[in-house]
Length: 287
Length: 256
Image (cartoon, rainbow over the protein chains, first blue to last red):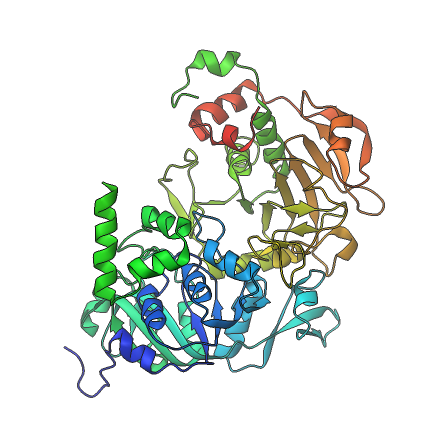
């Protein structure tokens, strides 16, 4: 049973998107084409919200939002579909100069999120120096160790977020989230770095069910950092959501090889239920 | 190549170019001890597994995701024995701890080992977007780094890279920068020169020094005693062909 003294944070994907504003900085969890909050991204694509700063280890979330012209500024270390090394719609948008890019190293992005979680202005990192990360990000500053070593390090600025979108396997109605795959990615950091975090999940369960599903270390996201919970079965599709399902490789290939407007028209014009039907119909055609 | 080559073909078929590349990649991890080997690409993956099965048994290997696996499964098959957990956040931490030797790819590499995997052309408006910086900057400043180039050409071995992702010897910063070697489909290179520039140390059998020089877009130092890349032993050849890569992924990455 849900605890009646606690807030029931369950809402629809549309209600999440209604709380987002154009111009916001939004962090998107997952990694490449792994456990991306795609149902929330699809809802975002159905809205008018635009002009976003997106922080993400980029996968099809970035590809779709960039292709749809919703990104003003992107903070990332890569854009990939994993089994397809280059995210084609991200790549096309980048080559036509569709958005401003803040391209960082993978570790720098992690420490920028960590600094935001800890409310630190920056964290020192041994990464970026000597490389063109410093040339293409003239806003980056360095710090010198105040101790005997005197080493110069990059002061990665905190990546504070207005909102975060993540997808986990299970959650309760209060925002406690659980992952059941091998990798938490950085989803808890996104949630804690954000003013408002929205967590979609495969299934909303009673709080008592969470610890039965896995050890306490699977309880990745705490309710104190979550503003809204969305039940979104298959909500990471076509990216992976181990151990509930793996990546839909056939459909991902279709996404990667289809011209954006044709893909969007067939799969993204309607509701999430329409999306599921369109994907099922597409799979039927392939048999 | 058949999925189950017979012992006869294993012992009688001559070593392929891809197999010399596997040996050269495996040798990169010799003497590394109990560290994580991070191979990127099919040939380095076969090489790291060969090293673990032979002369570098203490190496740690992942399944390419978050698990450290104790057994050496064939390329493309699921390992059976999990010995550890290494999600991305810990992996990035391990890089900074230095107990890792990565072998990355490179779309461009220059004579000092500066590597580009970000984009081709002007970064502000690239003609061709590639992978992005990924972890190349943090890798090269923190743990030993080698490179694997499956198609050696003057378009990859360039005078100047368009974007510096992996840091080369002329731009090295901090106490832990260390470039070990470069393996291509033509030969093996190190940086043991006074100015830390690239040096040819071995050519794969069937390749001439002149061929390597012609396919390289910068002046290449040549070791005094350029040797042929060593032959795999019969046991190594059997491991490559029957145990590690029975489906022949290596031959798809490097055509003979």
